[in-house]
Length: 442
Image (cartoon, rainbow, N blue to C red; front, top):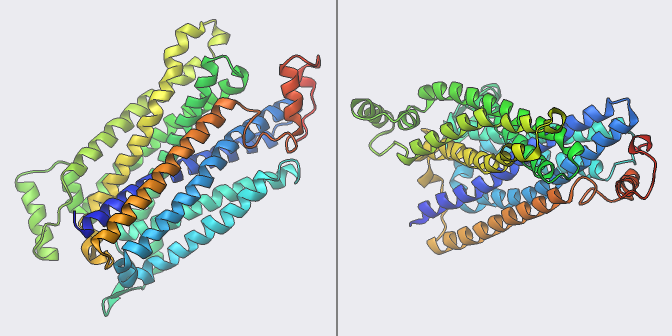
């Protein structure tokens, strides 16, 4: 493999792993914000306490994923300076400002709001605490939007002109309203809802299947299944609309994704040669396979994600747990398929742009930094090990936290949540006061 191949492979590995962190973070923070909003609006004290326990539980999973995702994001940031100096030299005037705003949103605003929220339970007013988690959510989506502004420009460059080999922005409005950006934003919004819903359903089904805190997890099993189903439908619709628009600004990618061959493909190849000069301007054929797999998984998830919700109310209908076990195991099967669908979608979007870094303006070969093959190989090995380790640690910590249940783990410190200890004692039968009579501290 030459330097360009190693740089592409390195970026593919780091971007894919980091994207999984980001997708789960966006989905979970939305779940936590909506759950806390519902809790604050609840007048009944016991029910509000139960819903705040759910906020703490899903918030703990979010904090774990966010913390490790930030580290993976730092690794991702190094990519641009180490391997892609050509992008900075030619397109820095365009991509620099959005990435700077993204860094401010993610590393300053979002992390500040999150710290205040995580340590603000019972220390600030409930409404101020709710405003903090919405601050986290909004800055998270703002950060994602600015990244997608850059990515949309790389897919469909608009609002700029070239002067002496360097790009200069001429129309920020065109850059911010780029169709390639907004199609992707809606697509990603559906995908993160799908992923968060699948995680909620998988964790909830695990506890319901074992009879652990069933009353606590049955509602979230329903909520997770519905969220995943709605996310899958939104993703499928946005993806279909996006595919139709792709024909206008990336006809080469469209031809490969649609599996065109013969005269149709020859016509696309001839048009690309006339536009860009001699060369192979078609993306690799296997991208079409990744796109088909993404489509199949999306349809499968849209059909099956709703099913686990039907097992949540089995106790009320008299259906035995044994008859519900298959439906309760289904989320654990669907969750990895959701991750796989996201990876296929990312490959379709990014690899499908090859051989361009910025479509029609800057090739990947011209964007690669002047780095030796040995240096590129070394950084590839190091970054891959770091991100793989982060992914494994993240999954192990989240799985452990999820198994501990609602009143233990990262955000289960009884000094922060006085009602948690009271509820633990009640469940063990050490006190006779019904749980509904315990006045929540929140």
